[in-house]
Image 1 (tube, rainbow, N blue to C red):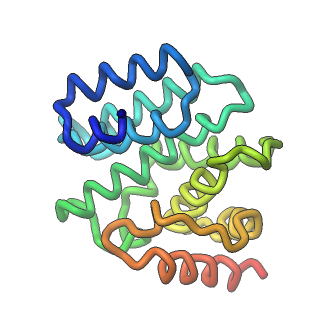
Image 2: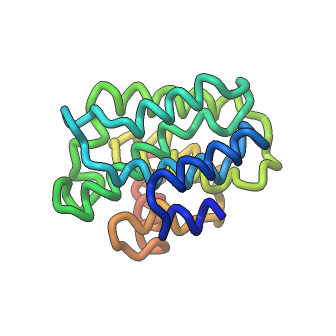
Length: 187
């Protein structure tokens, strides 16, 4: 229902459905990802790094238990916001060429996401690959190959379409190129 509302529904409906999902399951991983993707599409009212999607993602991460994969939600917000900026021409189409990944907020988000991953011990979470791919994507774009290489080793062959397809790229080719670049400097 949330997926359908996200695509076709008015914003109030999306928020109402999300509130109901969250009431039933406060840590619903996919629902948080869908809401972040929708909110990332709202126009920014201020500075480059100032957008409500980051605030929502950071709040959800802070309210979640320490071992929750929602800790990576701010990284997902960073990738989703880049998707929107690149699609509208406000950021370069080549993710690594964008200053989006190097601001103070982005650096803080990436550091927290990587630190969480170092301590996370739930290899069986059904959506772990989507989180690890978002984190590897963002670290690759930020020019942090050593950290990205560690994640690529953990991901193995489990590349996900999002975020590697951002913006309008071949996800397999983008994943392979980023992985090769990370491994080139960190064999």
